[in-house]
Image (cartoon, rainbow, N blue to C red; front, side):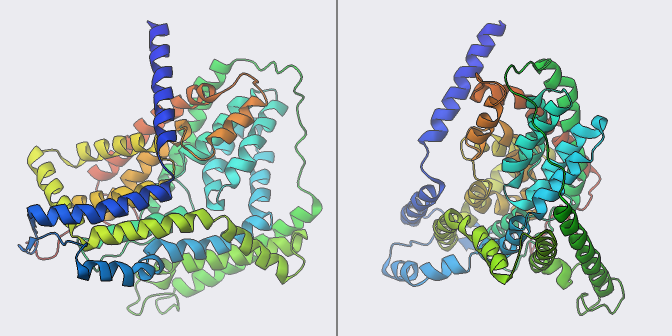
Length: 511
């Protein structure tokens, strides 16, 4: 029975890998979807595929985009579709600041400090927690923390693959959790906002939309990842007897790095004091004109705050540690971060066209109304819908790796659909983030999956895709169960998932 299951599971994984590899590049995929949206607008107009808006009572008719007027609009607004695409500017600005912090060596030094100073009994939770937190620094968790975790575990006579699994579970499985805002938060918020405006043109989604839920999720992932590592993964791996592989020495922080961290800490304290001075008094300069904190520049302009703080702290570390000599080094760091965004810019160009065509054709609104009517008549409540959407996102992640690409694809359908059912875009976004995270660690389509295999092969020459998936599958199962339970509890108690964010949405014009 066990052999039969293993054979079936192997065949399933092979099929998933082939299906994922057969998909075009995400940018090509969006170009295809943009063309399909144009063709669908013609067919929908021809059959008069319409729906009645539940808020206004207006009958929504599809718009044929391949008329003379439509073709003119496609040509004239192609550039503005791209430049006005909500996630574009906020992601680029955030990455400029993160680029300085990463290029200076600050993020790498902080990770090393965390794991090197940890007592042996706290090694596993520190690695998982560091993995979760490393997501504010782009891909540094994958290229630095995971191989470092193997070295650390081996140095204390523990199985190095278990150490890498613990770090990988935090970096990738806990991708949507964090105590701080990272680049993924404004990116997804921008896509959610674009999708929400299909129903409500004035709706805004802040980068802090899921902050409260993600803070709690950080500790949940840390505890769950620790338990799975210590109770399931490491016992299964057994004692490491790695033949010729000698334990590597982990270099402690140099005096220059320590000085850099001291400079960074000083700037962090000063910056925090300035923020508190601007936000705590009733007439603080960082409060909104009506004295509100939730509508203040601190919350609404969190991307600018992220850029300024990351830049200042990264610069302080760089000059303290000697990695920055002058302003040229700082600008080069910002330039390096922009180099990594090249493929993202290409993807955004085609995604922006697809989203615009989908919106212009009215197909997004019509499909959302039809879908909401079907779900409403099915009698499914919020919790069953949430669980089904988590599973859908998790399965989609197995064949399409990019988190932003997937959300750009499905947000224009599911965000308006859930809004019409009375649920906020922020709730829909957090449900997607759970599903997207839990299968990251077992998805062959995850961009760093091949790199993880290479890291593990250092300690197990026979390791392959099956080794990684079988090692990480327990994390996916436990994360899915606990994260779903956490969200259900959140819903039952109607807790806010972010500052000023409600779980429910009231459609304008409805009683």
